[in-house]
Every structure is written in structure tokens, then in C-alpha cells.
Length: 99
Image 1 (cartoon, rainbow, N blue to C red):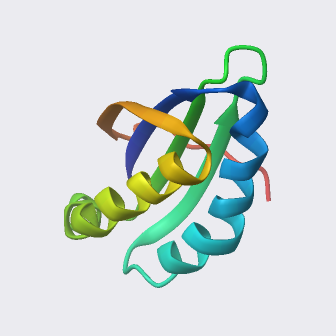
Image 2 (image 1 turned 135 degrees about the vertical axis):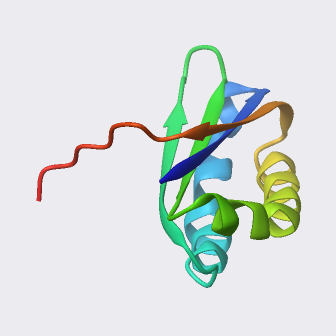
């Protein structure tokens, strides 16, 4: 499994707008991407920092989603009045979620 971590910074007051956009617009589009395995939305309501981590079945699926990810990342930033500050890609070496 592979992960793309997107970091945004902006006003704490706009995080709920970004979350609404992710739920209503971004997630449905991600579910259409081959190899998409999940998304985490991490928000710091004190600093205004937001992190979105998308999970992908394999490196090929993550690479194939890059163009769409760029578009969606910009959409999230605009919806929540956030600035994109970093994008990193990782190998997921341990993932544990109780069933």
C-alpha cells in the first residue's frame, strides 16, 4: 500500500468548509479511481493546518492518480481558503485497522 500526504495551512475557521468539500466533492471522485483504498482528513483547529492522506493499493495506482490528485488538491485548498504547503509520498509499511 502507498500513501500521499497533502499538507495545507490556512484559517482554522475555514476547516469545516474544506471538510464539507472533501465529503461532497472529493471523496466521490476518489472512489472512482482504480486502486483507491481510503482517505484520512486530519485537522488542527488551533493552527489551521489540514492534512489529507490518501491510501493506494500500489505504486502504479498512486502514480496514475497524480493528475487528478493535483486538481482535487487545488479544489480542497480553494474551498477551505487554504494554501498547499507540502505533498509527500510514502510506502505504507504497517497499516492496522480493527474490523
